[in-house]
Length: 272
Image (cartoon, rainbow, N blue to C red; front, side):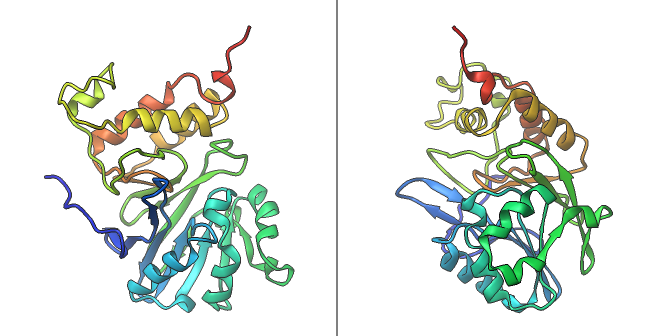
């Protein structure tokens, strides 16, 4: 059964109490996917987005019915401004005295430059939550994927819904974008993405592969990240760019395809 086409001017619940609160710029076709996880009257936000997109993201957070002062943590899985740029805005509006900014220690050095000096005490290491970060009846677990694509990159697993938030991993700058994608079975064996056997006008795979070749630093870093993710019990992949995947065969295929992808980052530079 194919997902119903969504309207993206409101939050989209991708699974129980997990909402996409992102922004799709139809002019540039660049889109970011912040996520809100709610449990009772508490919430966390993952990769909250850029400063220009803050108003759109916060409006969608409010439309879910959660009050910003109930946001318990802001999780940042790497340090790019497209997902961290609104950090100071988020800190100001959340107004929660128990608020934590959760990231990997190497990231926190750089995240400190997004906020005022007096709020830097909010920066908290994911190493302090090796057993997971509790959110009501849920537990969020963190798994490091160094250099995929920066030194402090990691992914976050919501153990309740088995949703893995992967930041740039599994992402894409898609020429045609939908929040949910399910690949046809033929896609798993296709060798010619330019000539679809199902005669579809658009294949998402070339954009996904090209994105990883450009954004990830090396084949080794991407392979290591896929080995980490391949060992997790997941039902869903929710990247910070691109589309959500919830078909198990698609997830396994993408992990294996990216694990062996060639021409990634520095490995794509041809030597004379």
